[in-house]
Length: 125
Image: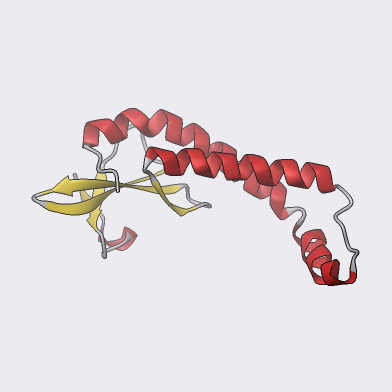
C-alpha cells in the first residue's frame, strides 16, 4: 500500500479530480446499457442476445477500466462513485490512516479518518 503525505496527496488532486469526472461520465453512459447488458447475459448461454451497440459498449467498458487502473496505479482508493469520495492512505502518529476528499470539496485535503472509522469519523487535518 502506498502511503501519502498531505503534500503528495494535494499534488495529485487535480489529476484525481479529472479522472473522477471521466469515471462518472463513463459510468453514467454505461448505465444506459444496463437493461440490454442484462438481457444479453441472460441469453448468452443460448448463443444470442448481443447488445445492439456492442462496439460502443465495449469501448466504454474499456475506457472505464483504463481510468480505474490509472486511479489504482496512483495508490488512491475510490470509496464512492457518486460522491467522488477518495481516500489516500497516510501515516499519522505512527499508524496508517486515510486522508479523505470528495469531488465537491476544495483543491486541498482538509479531512482524515482512522481506517475503520469511515466517512462519519472524519476529523479536520
